[in-house]
Image (cartoon, each protein chain N blue to C red):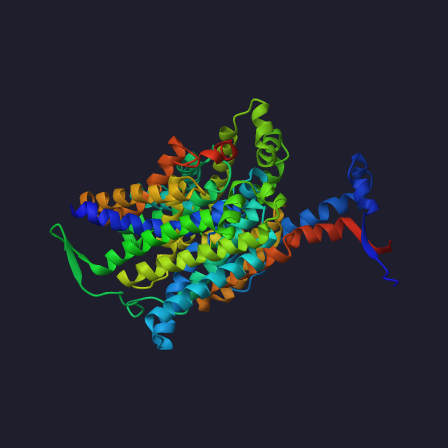
Length: 337
Length: 288
């Protein structure tokens, strides 16, 4: 019996090692190694509205960005704070309804409604989710799953806020270029802001809460307080996207509490690469256009996402982005044992 | 008087919905977000056996429950077992499976008045001076029997004892030679069959609709949290609390607020007694 055993050896590329430290600024090659992926992302996103062939696909870009914001907030909560939110629709709905109410009832311009809806909506979501924050385990997932379903039902049953028809006649953005560049800039800002945030001191505390909350408490920090801050940040992103959505569609209704907004960000995060923050954005750019192409199939799309999600989580839980980063930073070879 | 009678019936219906979820969570620590989907699956399978193949009602009920149990076991064996212990993946995977099933049914045009199951027995009796249809009486009887059976099963059979051992301390159970993976599959199968049983008992009272899946999931979760996740007796008692609270709100406030009761119950429980009424042994584990 001579079974040859091999294993895959992975080594960091020399250039990656060199760019880890101060030497990164010594040569153009190292500089471009560091900045090229980021520049491709930024410039690519900024160029997207220009290269899209039709109005319809430009609108899709805006929707992609809205989902990307939601996916970012999901990824941040799940993989940096350890809170799995199954109800991204809650954030969208609260932000969207707030913006719609302020715009139609108090006739504020979008310039005011979006920031106010973001901050106030995040406050509301945080207060709503506060009871389950002192607890560990599945409580957050359960409660966040229930809220959007219930919100839709309450609005429907009490016939408040426009009932099943929703609130019509919300102002749109001044023109579609402003609309698209606004959401794209928001995605880029949130993306790089979050990347910075998780490496700050507070980000360290967040990750510590996820990994070992007892240690955090032993250090004399209030876990609930930090979790509340994290939920506030995440729901601010969600409410921002909700407010943008309302102003894009010029309409706010109970379909903003629908499952699409809960499941697509999760699917995008898992496919794009959990815990990378760039991955979810990438995942949205893969998933949402597919979803637009499959629009005719109705709710079958959700089935499709869910199955992809299960397949990815069971067989390829690392996601596209982690795979890409590995290929970029490391080379692989087979070695005999 | 009618509050008392219908409150009891409603509570027992809630208890039967929640038992399956409580069982699976208590034993394998996997929150089965596909519980509502399994409920709808069983209703659908019964309907198609009964109307599509023209089988006897009793036969199709038994077959449907077995099929639902097998589906639950397969979900665990092929998906959940691979992500076990990874809390985030567990939640997402079971939720996604549930969504896939429910939305699949919705896509298949599975809604409206056409899908109904017949009641077991026609007619009604009068308790006090309130008319109650016999089907609801049967529900109460069957549920009492099921709870009694579960209690006997978990206290006097080898498998039942093994399940309880795993629920208390999985590592100790492993050391005593209990196959924890197998037991978790069994628990999932039994939990799915309970979801199916709930469907068969409760669906004849209305139509088979996809929304029922979400409602059942929410109600089951509410009952389990109020009773303490993983505690079966707690689930039964919490079912009575929520059940009566629901009937009281329907009588005094209107039926719109019925679902809000569930949410309020969860929120209040989490604020006042986070580990639920009877979740004592897990208190330290879950509280940060």
